[in-house]
Image 1: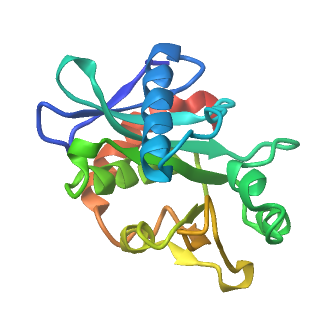
Image 2: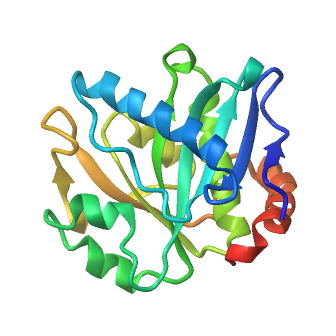
Length: 210
């Protein structure tokens, strides 16, 4: 499979690539470093331990010189391997039972970060679209994730619906009101033409995970 698939919908000089973390440890390292720094900035102190990618598909935006500008990752649910949202909120709500009931294949979109210089622009929306395209390429029937109050409005644009039965949680700390959301990757209300153009390319590259 190709190491990366470049998304055509972000103007130069920014490119967005989708790849399996195991296939591109160099790019996965850029994603992790940016994610860790973003957490440190938002939490105002030491960030948690770096995320475990565990075979995730990573979507990474890079600028001139390959500098990482933002990213998101998509985890395909596999037997015996809890999704990140289960690990994060499992002691706060019955997320594991909800995940078990969800139509398969199920993916989680999580770990979104945007570099400070890109905040307020279009990059967060473009990364969200790319993650939906990855979900389609993996054959997913549902997307699960969690989002705090500052991000939920963006995700609603792409079809995310908060789960009222799973509550609102002070995660990662008391400044945030985080909710679990679900989305159908095949009925995304925005960006259909972009998704249609991108999914076939990604499906060829990511076929080994389907």
